[in-house]
Structure formats: structure tokens, C-alpha cells
Image (cartoon, rainbow, N blue to C red; front, side):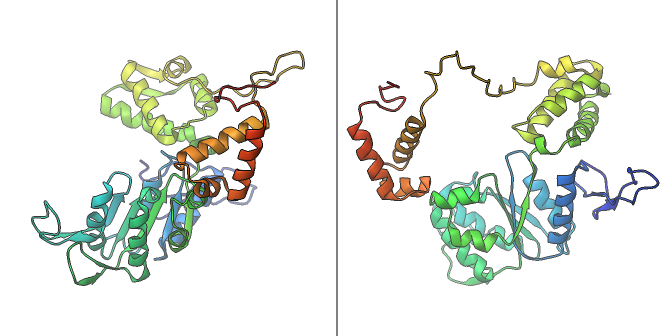
Length: 352
């Protein structure tokens, strides 16, 4: 979105003539000068100068692929391919072929030899987006590939090598995925060499205004509308909103405002009709108000344990790993519940 040079550039000193110059960075592809983004820009620049694997985390819509592309674009590999693979979008039985390629006749529909992403990214960057969605079996094959960047095409017998820099990303919490036995711990340590975290929009302060202004200019041009900016009340709404969908949500809201209105300034009223209601904070309950609807801690605990057992197909061991407790703890709790009359919420009981 920004039209800056590929390397970080210095902005003017906004602290005043007598204050020490504050060097603020911008990186091509990003908008914003908040403190968290300044830290990120520096880490991106450092990561770009290395060939070590980069592990990007962040909520959906924060710009993880933009981050990966930026690392590639300001690296020594910038003139070579950037090959992205969305691990969540590729069927499990095709993932190995997409990554490593296949030979003619390897499976039904393989009518010719085909290079995979690993070969296509030779000399450049291989970006594995939504890495936590990769099947456990495929994670094992990826781990072997990462040992020395060698692979065998599906149906083939010849070992091939590639010189690709690996960047991966996920919107999940890796530690939770490892505890739930959905992500290999050894693979995590192989990939998690240079961590980069994309901050959510709600933590970026006034960056939301800069981003919204840029989006407004771009969408007004595309939609051939004459918009000049946001009113003060509109800016207040933009700053106050929590943006659970992050930049992607902001993009949608700004474009809707452009399309659904004639031009001029985006007002607070325009945004209020488009933004979903914010979740209300928990209201203070006075001593005279009833609290019968609030489950006890014991009820909440029981609900969580029984839900974990259900999600793990009745396997107590897996449920214990997911809850970060020992299996004996779950067995002991179940025996205690069997001896007590009240049931947990949703199980036919309530508070006595």
C-alpha cells in the first residue's frame, strides 16, 4: 500500500528541534509508525539479512503474508521466486505433491511430471502459510525435508535438493497446538528460529487512522468516488473499535463506506451503520442482584473437562494433554462428580 523504498527510511523528527532525533522506520508494504510496528520493522530488517527460518505468528487479518513477502523483498533473494503455499487450503492427500512435486503416473490424474513448491522456490523463498493446519503425517515429512532441504517427488526415486529460504506463519498458538498433540514439538523448534509477531490492529494506536486514510484514497479511486477523509467523530470510532478482524475487517468497512455513500467525508454515522456492536464489558453486579445465572468454578471446571473428553473422542489421555493435567486428575474428578448430586450446566443440573 505504501510507496516507499524497499529499505527502511527515516521520517522527520516529530519530537521538536531541541529533542534528540527519533529515527522512525517505514518498510515497504506496511503503514504505521506505532511503537510495536517500529520494533517489528527492525526485526524484519534483521531477518531479511539472514537465511534462517522465519516463524510468523499473529491473528487472522494482521498481514502475515505481507510480512513474509517483505522479508523476501528486502533480502538478497529478492530477484528469485517467492512461492506461497496455504496449508489450510490444500487437501491432505495432495499436500505432499504440492510441496515436493510428482512424477507421471504417481497417482490418478498425474499425467506428467510436475515440480512442487520446493523446486519452484529454488534460490528464493518458500512460504508455508497456516503451517499449524498441516496434517501430523505431513509434518513428519516436512521435518525430514528441513534437515538438509532434500526431497523425493511423489512416485519418484531420485533425491533432489533445493536452496530455498523457509518462512512459515500461523494464526494459532503454537504452544497450545503442541499440548493438544496437533503440532510436532520437534518441528516447531526446527521452524521457530527467527520469530516475528504481527500485532493486532487494536494494539497499534493511531496506525488505524493512517491505514484507513490510505484505504479510503485507494477505494475512492477504484470506485470513482470523491472522498476527502474522515470526520473527527469517525476517527474516534475507528480508534475505539476493537477490530477483531484486524486490517481485513478495516478494509471491508472502508470499502463499504465508499460504495454506500456519495462522497465528501466519512462520518461517524456512516461507520456506525457498518460496524458490528462491540462486546459489552462485564457489568459490575451489586450485592442485591441475583447471581444464580453465574456458574460456580466447580461447574465451569466440569464443563471444560467433559468438553475436552468429548472432543478427544473419549480418550482420557489426549484430553489430559489438551487440558495440561495428568490423566489421574481427570479420573479423580470424574469419581468426585459421580458422588455428588448437582450436575454441571448443560447436564440437567444447577446450583443448589
